[in-house]
Amino acid sequence: MTTLSDIQRGALGLATTDSPTFNGLSIATITTGGLVVGAATSPVTSLNPATAGNSVIDSGTAWTSVAKNWSYRNLLINGEMKVAQRGASFATISTAQYTLDQWKYTLDATTGVITVTQSTTVPSTQFTNSLKIDVTTADASIAAGDIAAFQQLIEGLRCSRAGFGGSGAQNLTLSFWVRLDSTSLSFPATLSGSIQNSAQNRSWPFEYTVTANATWQKITTTITGDTTGTWLKTAGIGLILNLALACGSTYTGTANQWNAANDFATSNQANFLGHIDNDLYLTGVQLEVGSIATPFEYRSYGEELALCQRYLWRQTRTGTGDPIPASGYCRTTTGGELYGRHPMPMRAAPTFSVSAAGDFRLRSLELSTDTTAMSAGTNIESYQIAVTVAAGLTAGNGAGLDFDATAGGYLQCSAEL
Image (cartoon, rainbow, N blue to C red):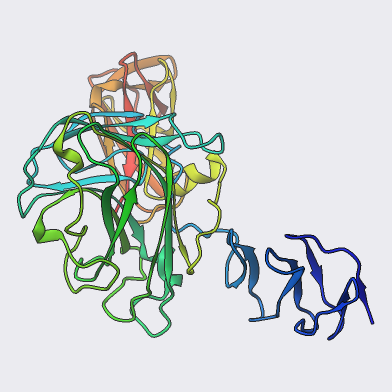
């Protein structure tokens, strides 16, 4: 008979026989191959083998067998808010737009105005950034058709493993850190959000409670897998995560159930837009398959940036003469054609745009001349830029493109959802 000489609370061991002892105490409940764990209420407990291929995790209160891919768990991109290709500050936002990479502000009818910044206020040193939402123009009266929310639109190819829309639908668990600074709202304050399909006719509203002012709090909520509805598993929108700021009755629904409606929130949603002293911070946002919130999946900046660049890449001027990753030739005395490849294959053929046509220079041999017009053709792998200048080019000569002295110049391709 094997003796387990010393198993402390929280310690692990592996049973090798059906009837081992702990300091002479028989532990008959342990199955061969079971995981022996020091417990709070008894000397040891055993987690018996469950499903082949599962992992065992500490949930904080118990050891649990879970099916889990430990890499690529987070269905969301830029949950740590550290990628900001468009910039770190977005002032006086009153229309729908993207802010930090992948995070879109959406609204309907409300007169509230916000400013969004990439903040360094974080819940712990494990995080570097948060998304800060500051109310700059209040909307104290939210009408039935008003809505304001931050959302992430998740590509169907990225979230298809959840299996929504069929009998194999898996549960999802959302976790994130939130901080609410307000002297006008009462605490505890109820906020809410939802999970939706692309058609927005299947919605799972959820609520969460912020218990104290100006205090970071971790939120977790589990969403039951939806076995009905249409959930795209293509390069289109597979799933939508909404985090509401304010919501009228047209867009509210019952919490913790699937509703055949366009629900962004619940009727208990506080009006975050109601006063200009309100600030909200978000970071560590993770959505994963399963019913347990695992620790946040940290990715390097390079990994996170590459994931973002499937949907948007932007090159911003940092100094005069910064080169653009495109080269080609002069077609005529006033026109050039240049070619380049995207940093990552993109979700779809992207839309090409620049800050202004005159923010660039075409270089050919010793000549450097300002551009007057630019256009481009794109596919998911590459782009072709047609450039016009006033005069002076030699047809057939090689050409390149760089930024001129104009501050704030940029070139980008967007295939965002």
